[in-house]
Image (cartoon, rainbow, N blue to C red; front, side):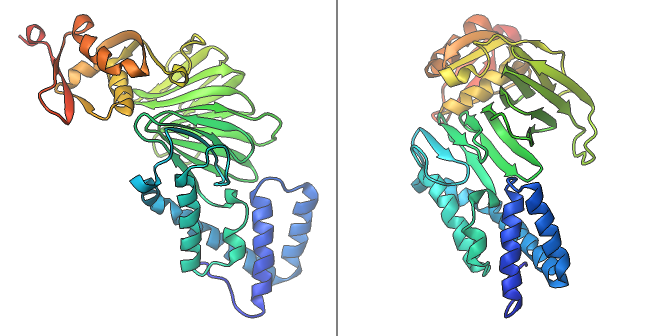
Amino acid sequence: MGAAPENADSANFDEATQWFWRLKGGAATPEDRRAFEAWRKADPRHATAYEEAREVWDVVGELDDLRELATAPDFAPPAKGRFSAGGHAGVGFSRRSFAYAALAACLALALIIPAIVYTQPAWLLPNIHATRTAETAEIVLPDGSAAELAPKSRLKVVYSDSERRVYLQSGEAFFDVRKGDARAFFVSSGDAEVRVTGTRFNVRQGAAGVTVSVAEGHVEVRRHAPGDKTGASLAEARLSAGEEVAALERGEGLTEVVEAPPSAIASWRAGRLTYRGAPLREFVTDANRYSEVAIVVSDDSLLDLPLVASLRTDQIDAMIEGLPDILPIEIDRSRKDRIILRPAAAASN
């Protein structure tokens, strides 16, 4: 399981871990890499120790399984905070970030991983960030880029010496990517992948699929086949500021690139939700990110009804009450734990 070797080999292992985290962080110079190769080839035990350091990293990667412990109520952060993706204190450092760091240290001790591994810069550790109902969070990424998470969203940060990659596993996030880093920046969400070098854009994983909207700069969007590991793409699109494209759940390629008004891109950051002919399923998804009472539909056919609306996030309940005025829907509040959207009686007859 990647435990440290004993006796004389421990010195080689310690040196190997030093090389590992230096190369892993992406800040290594060409001279560093040449020096590493010389060190690795100087003694077969060096190469063996480096592989064992890599195995330790793989074990540490399994910390993802502990993320649920860090979402317990006792570790709930403020409604909005700013913290480092590396777990270091920033403005409004949250108890959840502290929990991740504590869990990492506890597991490392349990596996008898040398202190040098889990006390190195935190980009060595998996970085998962999640928000709860009506909660947003601004995350400072290891390279100085920023990601702002919408409510009920989850993000995984995985940087290496060759690329900066973020996985939007659910929800929505706005990215402000730092320029001047030679490594490309990727955001993967569902079957879609966004590639940039320095720009500002929004990625939404909604009920209808993944939507990418660009506020500044340019991005490349690719749609991969589900489960494909070869890197081949089914479709590609290049977006400029004020444009967006979607990889729909019910489709294999990308939609046409369309105009995205600046006021509509990531409008949730300003406390607004905007729908320009979007299916009702998108509003239901958003409403459930802000409402403590679940919003459900009794008939899936309602989810495809087009909706044109713009509202503040604190107007969701009023919006639900007003839906029967614009769509063939009835509101059922007979249960305390949910609000049910039903087809209007006239429409169902």
